[in-house]
Length: 113
Length: 113
Image 1 (cartoon, helix red, strand yellow):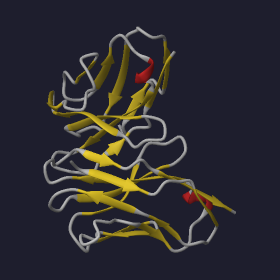
Image 2 (tube, rainbow over the protein chains, first blue to last red):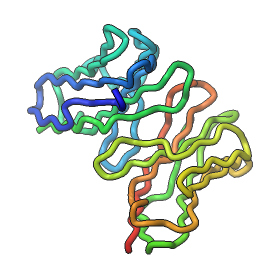
Image 3 (cartoon, each protein chain N blue to C red):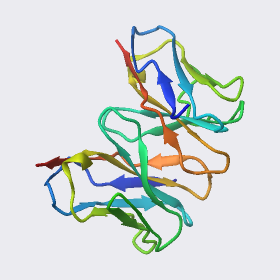
């Protein structure tokens, strides 16, 4: 596609529920990134994929968070047993191999009640 | 570890005023430095970048110079427009990673007609 697409744009859920956030990167971009942006803060790195594999998941806050990219294109960020502290905007970005310029999506705003 | 500090906002200016948003960083070696901009309702966009000392990045009338001696990358524009109203993020990629962006907390700019 022309840009990085993220769905849903807004998600409201209850504490303890399971949530999936989807990212469709720019066609041909081999690198994909997830970041989390809390209110009034800059984005924080969560995970980086090169192709299908997670090359760096050091930013995932705990084992409730998991991300997959099974075919090297679309990625899903999965959050189990959501907590109110998970409320944030989750940003996805992609880049071509070896490039350090990322193209970001508009984000998925998650609110946990 | 690597970090970025930028001036707190909001910064409120009249149209055609001169803009400076301060950014300083902590990192070993020579990181790559970036300014990203987030317009209301849109994803983060790369505004400009610089990859080595004394480089000047520029785009859309904005400029920033990589100053190794002061570990700074201040953003400037000679004459702001209402359409420049947005949140501006300073960021770096350290020498220990080719992909992990470290962001500052962002500075909101409001330009009044």
